[in-house]
Amino acid sequence: MQIATWNDSGDPSLFLSLDIDMSVIDQFLEEYNLKHPEDRITTTLVFAKILGETFGSKKSINGNLSFGQFHPNDSVNILIAVDVQGSNLGFVVLEGCNKRSLRELNQDFKHDVKKLKTHVDVKFNSQMSLLRYVPAFVIQILLRVSTWISYDLGLSVPFLHLKKHNFGYGMITNVIPFGVHDVHAPLVPFLRTIYV
Image (cartoon, rainbow, N blue to C red; front, side, top):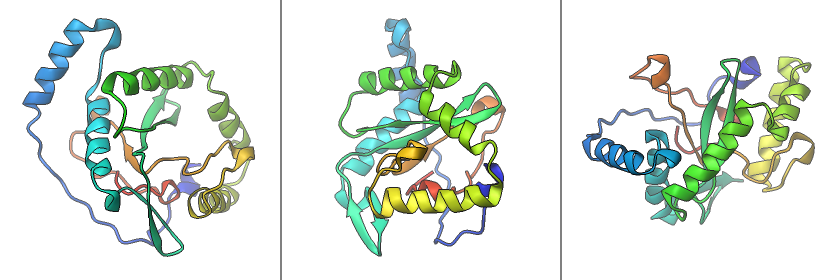
């Protein structure tokens, strides 16, 4: 899967760094998590909500390109990469980051992460078992075709458990637990995300 994912970029790309004063967010998280120990919220989730509000505020920046046209989307759906027991990388797509509360997003996120980490996510497990025995060049073709179907045509791909716009429109990954503090995430062409 990893070999099939990376190839030369065919799209224009822009990388930037932005320093953010986290003191207000850190204070909010500390106070909220002390009051709600059973419903702790992480920085990753706060950023999903911030990006949801930001991209949801203008229709001209949340959507996808299909056949040379930009198609806006009302819902800001954001993919969050999840480490699965150090052996794989799964993902959770939070839908409606611009419309739902932090608490609602957190409940969905925790539920989906638990399914991934306890190996009971049927969709993820079947995708991995299917792709485990397929050569990298076939996976690359499969990813390109299924992404084209999912994003350009706006259709689901049932045999791969992919729904319309399956990976959302943006991606968040938290690499701080791995000791990485300054990084530009590589673009993953088949995700079709506007931002990483």
